[in-house]
Length: 115
Length: 120
Image (cartoon, rainbow over all chains, first blue to last red; front, side):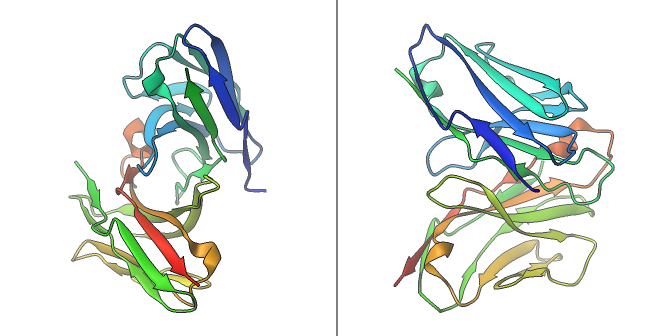
């Protein structure tokens, strides 16, 4: 089962709201990722968790707060976002270091609109 | 630092014909992985094919094949018998296979993407 699921599919929120994005995988992967993607652009890496520990934070503003409660779940908590944060947010997972091919499997994304 | 270049912002092909998407990359590393991902309008990023740099044989997956030229740092994707469902953005990506203890080796370096249009 090579599936990564994300909820919700669409989210509209005001700049003062607090919301969360959720990602789940059951492939036994121990590395999970959050990406931000603008239209017609490649994904931009935001965070990487490896073995449930934050491994990479690509200088993301603190209004984005990641959380990895267990090896299957990844959350992205959103607070006080700006309109320019409107984008497609993709979650991905992969085997961690030590496995040969490192390919990442992506979820379908959450389309976020900040009003 | 590694870079990935896709020089074709958009390509179009007649249904059932063959199309080749170009990708070049720059790296000083000798061991790495290359990927082609497809992102249709439905948004899901789908892995199409991967190539290990240490393998001389070009990877193939059904109608998809690559032409990997390591010395030229070129990694093109050939789609045979194009189908309407192949219409998508195609991204080429690079990943280091270096020191497994370096967190940075998790990162994919992406090309800008090529929009593929299939004409019926």
